[in-house]
Image 1 (tube, helix red, strand yellow):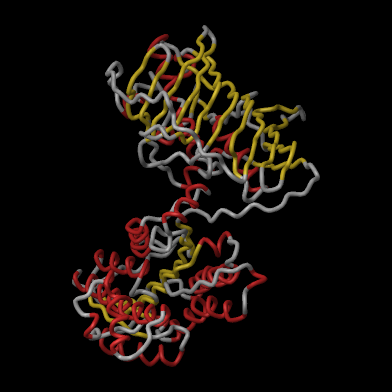
Image 2 (cartoon, helix red, strand yellow):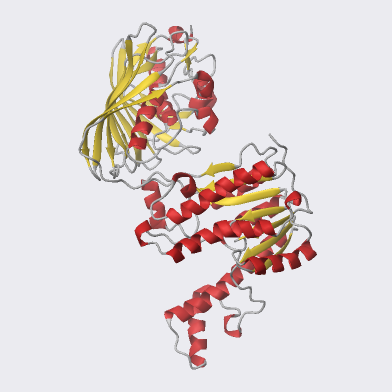
Length: 575
């Protein structure tokens, strides 16, 4: 692991595509963190002085002014000619705004109008700029083009447009610097290069070449901090409200501009450069494809190792780490969704905990997830049975979990929760960490599964909690990552029933089985959500409840119906 060079006022970055859009926002944030020197590259022309008709005119009235000017010159305005002049003026304004924002931080910045695929022009113009700014110590390559089409409709020109901006652009930039002086190389790649995406075969190829180039350059120049950032979708002008809604329906989170820019700064300022490639943001979910008619059975083998799953240390019962039932369920769900791209879980039913997985001397060396296809309807739904089992040393099979799953191409919209009640009755006044203290007097869970923020109200029939799950790292999640389903928030959602049984009966409970679980929208993390737990029955040995997970307005994220819990004494859980 190599120590990375730190930024200083003398650092000089050349930033392709850096005068407008997302790359510009990232550059401004970097300048705010460490004022240094920036050479911004772009194809747009920078107008030193705007035409008279455009001066003191805001963008809402600019097109009208352009048409009036063309008419005054005896020219007939067309949508294309007006748009061309409009783009030229507004692009120049955006460039000036970016330069001003950078210079406001105390940094130095200048702009070069050049196409990074033009080798000679780039070399000549950068050489002139270097005489003023000093030797280049960093490159941020953010230039890129799109030409989204299905592969059979792509032309050679489409491919060249997309490919050369990324790949030829990087090659040309590297010819303009002394490799021994380069301290930072940041490549703006995309999750499309990592996961692929329909209509973007050329874009995927170009970005994956950037990824591989980062690894190769790092091998050849180990003292240079090299990283290819595989960005997801940004919350920018390109993501319209309509597209954002589609992303939400497909479980794709967009990257807020401020958060993404800060992530770039953190990558550049990382004390070490352990990896030359990082993925930031959600994957672009693939579209569903036609299914064949044959019904198959799949077997997926996995070694579940305590050291690879640090979160398990926060789920210890009677002295031993225990796999949460929600994590076993998420393994089933994630595996099914990977087998059938474009389909996601809508519901599962008859989920049973048969013999849990405890990390002690009885832990099997290998666990098998068996997935049996029951029915398939292309572009609609898939019905599956799933079991997790293992064999002991004598070859005897032990079944641990089972369920029936329904995957859909389109997830129905959930109805608002009609019985919502967020009024506080102040019967239980404990908050946050207090529920998880005192050796698990109420809840035994560690930080990965916390926390219930507060109990809003409680009665013999119902308990309503406000919850907040602080996202844990990918390393902590280990083999059970958050995807469409979040096993950690689902586990957290059930804590209200623990508090209810402890409050009314001084008892604890553990999950036994779930009649049905439905998910309409991904449960949020790093912000509050609410759980309304309706208790349906209580006996000396069990409790049955429905859990509705929703937002403050009652819009349902998911719901767990007919959750059967087994009553335990608190003493037995802690012993």
